[in-house]
Image 1 (cartoon, rainbow, N blue to C red):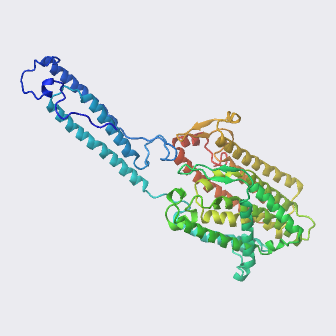
Image 2 (cartoon, rainbow, N blue to C red):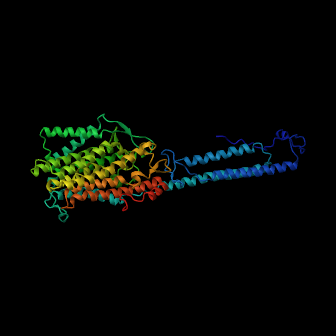
Image 3 (cartoon, rainbow, N blue to C red):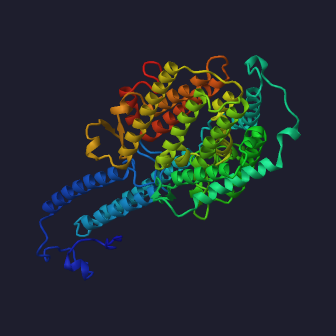
Length: 561
């Protein structure tokens, strides 16, 4: 930084003044112009300096607008930012202040201005020096106030998540109990509750713990490629091993070996409720562990969705990527115990139907349900890398919401159609089966093509295969797709998901609404998730997202919603 070099006395270059002469005669200075010329030169120079000081002052008082750089500040959407890195504003103010000093020092070092004008100039300088820190401190205080504003809580805030944590397990057990009734009508809801001794089985808990440990063993096997996830707040990228499909194949081998050795899988059906209670107990214990360890997590490790409220963070998750060494707990639970367990449960229900209905082969309805859902799980495991860009991984922490959903809700509710068909078989004709298969394939094509297009664009936006797609540029440096599948509706993958969910329920017939609970629940889930995506994208992309919504007005259902 260049310091001030202004001389303490007059800046005149007169040799007599440097020697301290008191003579009134100024004719001895050969370079001194006449008095009138000196005055005119001084006045002209003073006007120039006033203009220069005005320009410098205007530069220093210009509001600061910081463009994004990495993850150091919040996203820029064409409006003044409200949050900045600590000290950035003050440092910019100091740099401008010292720069103005340098310009002023260079411009006045050889000035012929009288001493009285130099004193006035110093007074103006001191006033200008007071302006910059005051402006900076004001902006800093404003930034601090905006940064301390409370976050808007989702799911109804603290009361909402508290009721969800109480209601979800209860509702799950009531649904499973109703499904086992001979007449599973909603008019019979709630079903009679069994004794607690019938629900809790220590052996069932041991079996579930063994299953969880087996999948954890498959997860740590050094097979499959290693990829990097999305950038974190501090710029780091965590590494993930993609071996979910290999874990599925190993599970198939293990289940096949168990059947060959005479292991009775019918136990899973007979103890389905105790196994669900064991899974719920394990999920609650895991959530408690996650909440305790998150209390010592550094600020950089916290999830963007966390709030600081103990109850809300217990539900949504406080820590974004809780790991034990390289073992990522959230990533593991997303696809392994619950999703692969869903396929095993469906197989158990298929065998149970054959045994209870005394059939040599499973019904066509059961085959359709198993086949459709097997395709869904295999697709998710084969495209495992796509999970790394989802909101579950990048935004939500790992708490009760994901732990209960992954470990309990997925294997015991997503298999609801197969569980229903065991005691309530339904005959499906081949023409009807053909229509259901066509519906399933239609939903799958929309789901897979939309996700593949999105993932390919995220990996390499300059891919020649994607050159025909139209985009909208955003201030974050990323582009939004406005053609192809993503120009049809804003969430075509959700549309495909819902069509497939309907195809899973149709083989159960129309005698009861209970098999269609999954479709109803999934519609509510995806509409709510779309609303969360909408808020997140509007905040992230700003005006570009508004433009995208004008180009693509429908969210999930064309011409409906």
